[in-house]
Image 1 (tube, helix red, strand yellow):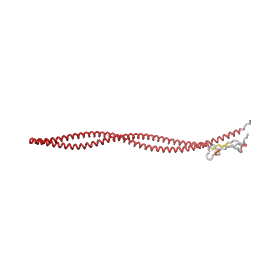
Image 2 (image 1 turned 180 degrees about the horizontal axis):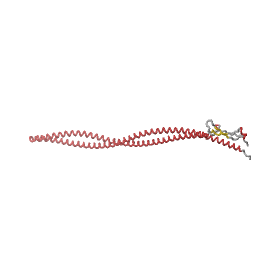
Image 3 (image 1 turned 60 degrees about the vertical axis):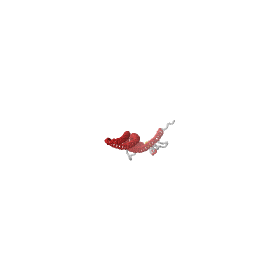
Image 4 (image 1 turned 45 degrees about the horizontal axis):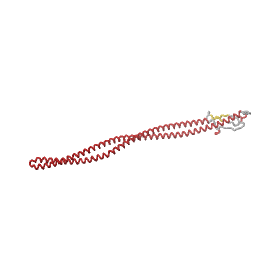
Length: 312
């Protein structure tokens, strides 16, 4: 078997290397561009997220302030309800005591009325006895004059007692009517007062539950505010990282720009010919940066100096 030329093998390997290098450089540049675009989008998203988190934190602070005011108001209402509950309980007890005393007064007045009736009856009988005594004194003549005077005085006292008993009876009857009406009114008021006291107790319990719920809401809002602040800090850090990623992508693009791809007409891939050789040429650009390397251009097309090299 005839042995192939070493130059042919070298040229083929060089061709494959240039093609692969061209593909790799192109992929790296494309990836760097994608990273730069993605990092820019990520930065925009992070900025929007940070702004949203800041707005949410501000809203959470406003809500927290409102919740604190509401909690204070609810606590004041709770305290007032508790005080009202105590007052209503005391009032209910006082009304019951007054009603009990009123019933006792009613019984006492009724007994007084009965006693006055007895006194009035005694006065009437005394008056009758005085009349009879006066009649008997008149019959006795001269001997009954002294007794007649006594009988007359007794009759006067009986009439005065009867008149006073009638007046007391009238006053007692009026007092009895008032006391009965008052007792009935209090008897009707007691259930309402007890119901009011019960409602006030329920209001106090509800106010305490509202106060506890408001405190829990305030704690939840505070936790939400802390989480929002953490999200804002994380968004800012993500924005900073995305900027760093974009910067690194730019550095990668600048670094990889050392190689010039065929898409930019910077790497030339030779066609298959019988007379080819490899030459390496380094191009240095000193227009803008004296020490900045623009890259390596590989050109394996035939040139005028090919005759200087021995062909196989």
